[in-house]
Image (cartoon, rainbow, N blue to C red; front, side):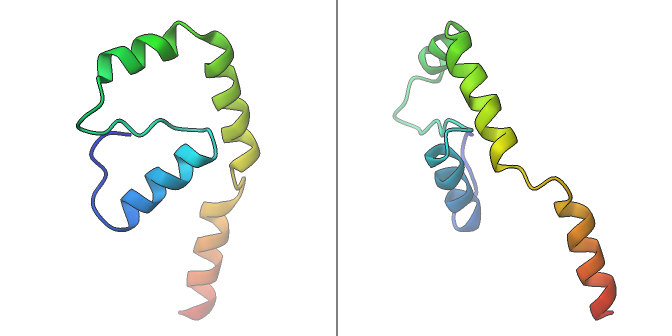
Length: 72
């Protein structure tokens, strides 16, 4: 994640990084070096994919739409 919008998006970036599904690249970081390290580590990439699957809410979009329609 690069340059998230201050506020909620920064909170999302922090949350996703803490759960091991994203890397928050900050201004002081060397983005090229971080990406080089990530792409040279298939194990790390696989772990991030696994973490993303475990964190995902499979029907979240559908659930949100149903909540909105019930309130309308």
